[in-house]
Amino acid sequence: MARSNNFGNRGRGPFRKKEPEHRINENIRVPEVRLVGDNVEQGLYPTRKAIQLADELELDLVEISPNATPPVCKIIDYSKFVYEQKKKQKEIKANAKQTVIKEIRFGPNTNEHDFEFKLKHAIRFLEAGEKVRAYVHFKGRAIVFKEQGEILLLRFAQALEDYGKVELLPKLEGKRMFLTLAPKTVKK
Image (tube, rainbow, N blue to C red; front, side, top):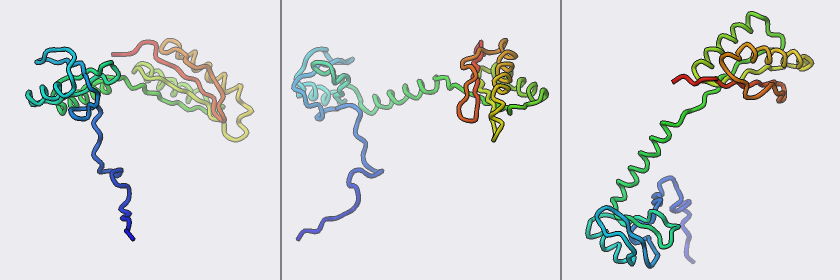
């Protein structure tokens, strides 16, 4: 009787070699490809001939557009191509603006001094181009003061109308009533 070796998930562990994103060289299984590139004559080629051309140039045949009929391939250095792709993705990610939302918490019976203090913080956040989410948190039986909370948030929004615009009017979710404000002009 043959014994089975149970050495875990073969080929599916953390050290498994990652499959390439594109089909390259012998992994291209179609009979004919459209070849594009810098130092080759563009046109339709049998896959074998295209692989031979890539070998002669000591480069890889890479399937760029697999859904086209016939698939579009390019003769390039694959590792350099992957490096350039990752570099572009990283650059796109770095240039994407992250939206920052600052939260300001009130109680339903917040006094005037605390209101003014939190108002100054909100003005600073909005001038810096950040969104502000103000909320009134109702503890225990304080939920009976939800009208007071709504009035407080509306007064807060009115005080900030020169710096930001209301994105979301006061809305009660559970024990919190939210108000969201976005900056009017984004600082560069």
